Length: 99
Image 1 (cartoon, helix red, strand yellow):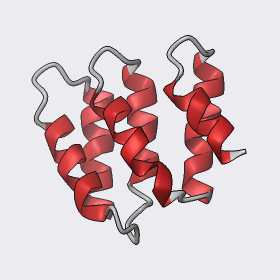
Image 2 (cartoon, rainbow, N blue to C red; image 1 turned 120 degrees about the vertical axis):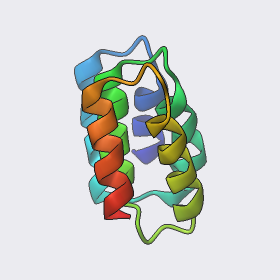
Image 3 (cartoon, rainbow, N blue to C red; image 1 turned 45 degrees about the horizontal axis):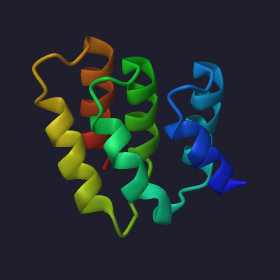
Image 4 (cartoon, helix red, strand yellow; image 1 turned 90 degrees about the vertical axis):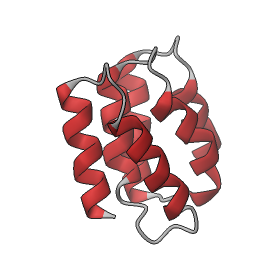
C-alpha cells in the first residue's frame, strides 16, 4: 500500500486530491525508505505548490528519521527558492522549526 501511495504522490498526472491524500498519509506512516524518492518532488518547482507545501508539512514529522539531515537540507534549499509561494515558504519554515 505504501508503494502505491508513493507512486500516486510522484505521478503528476494523478488527480491533485489523490496525491494530497497520499501525502497526508505520510504523517501517520513515516516510511523512511521513501524519503529519498520524495525529496525530488519537494524540490520540483514545476510541481503544484500546494502539494509541495503538503509534502513539506508531512516531512516535518520525520524528526526521528535516519534521513533527518537530508530532509532539513532539502527544506532549507526549498526555503531559499526565489519563486517560492508564500504558503510553501511558511510550511517549509514551520517544518524546519518542528525538526
